Amino acid sequence: QVQLMERGGGSVQAGGSLKLSCSAAGGIFLTCEMGWYRQGPGKQRDLVARYNGQSIEYADSVKGRFTISRNYDPNILYLQMNNLRTEDTAVYYCAAECSFRTPRYIWGQGTQVTVSS
Image: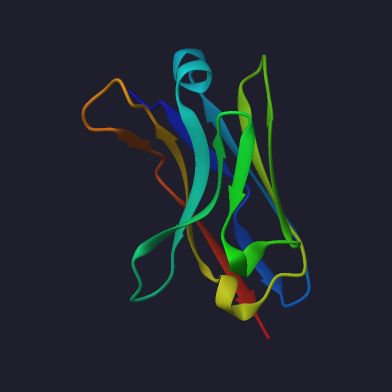
């Protein structure tokens, strides 16, 4: 049962833009905190941006360049990525953090973003 489905990854040159989207089942979208994470080559999976109640958290490295947003009905989470850098190259994951369930996180399958110089 696929609950999160990412789209929009690809290859782009440094300075370019990409927009990721994540389709989510309605129950997850409304009851869990949604966010984006990424895992670069040889690195751990880190937060990119997430909703935390009514506020939004961004990793310092993406502030001013990336924007997270969401749409209801259909339930879609977005990540607009501008002024991409080579260090943004990673697999990007949509995630739902659900405090009421175990395990706490639901992950999408990931989408590759490659930024070339």
